[in-house]
Image 1 (cartoon, rainbow, N blue to C red):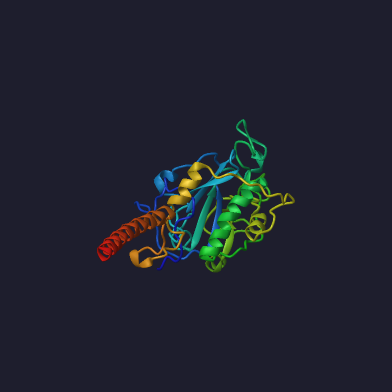
Image 2 (cartoon, rainbow, N blue to C red):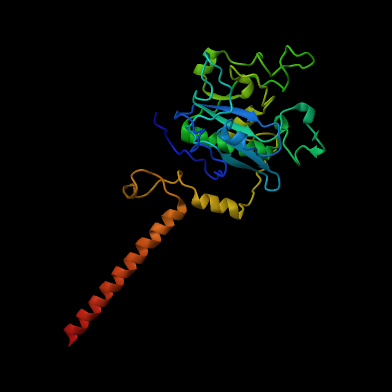
Length: 298
């Protein structure tokens, strides 16, 4: 199957990329997104990639940014969903999977193990505006470059255990009211959560603010706070943008027919090579003209 469009997310780190190893996935064309929360505060190695999503978003509170780590190509199946035998395909069903570092557990809405929400970690159901906007950027990029619709399921149940386990209401775990049937999943396009995917019993990402993310992705304000915050790029950001391939179209595709894109740094290097060659030719022509003029005058 053809993998259409850019496969690397601009600015995403490939330091934890598993798509070229033993856990590389199947080619597909993404048409839906699945949101997970890690229920942790740090980036994990996903057991060497065996249970990795497509990307992980790690909050950078100082810069008010989400640092993206890409684990598989956009149109390559990830491995964060359970896929039971004899049922429906999950990971390979055109699903782009996002793990967001933090929690969706309302018991950790303000504090968690001595850490403070919004300072040390994100409680995603009440995520700050900057985090919503950062995720919205990725959602918008996926819509523009891969056609994942800017729509989502209706119900995002608060994080809780299976209804068969008493004391938790509503239940986002197990066979919850929001989980899709196999037929619904097969035809689904847009955004959903881990709690909505059949054959799975996880309850993340809880009461996730996907509606606000989609509003921001469409160019609107994600909350009542409409003031735009400008965050300066770090040196690492600039370096990543400068070296990232798969985004900028190659102005001279004949130079590399296997890759229609070019990294900005490579493009500038090519321009420098061409300019130096032109300089040499101009100098040679100038010398020849001077010699010709001197001979004619004599």
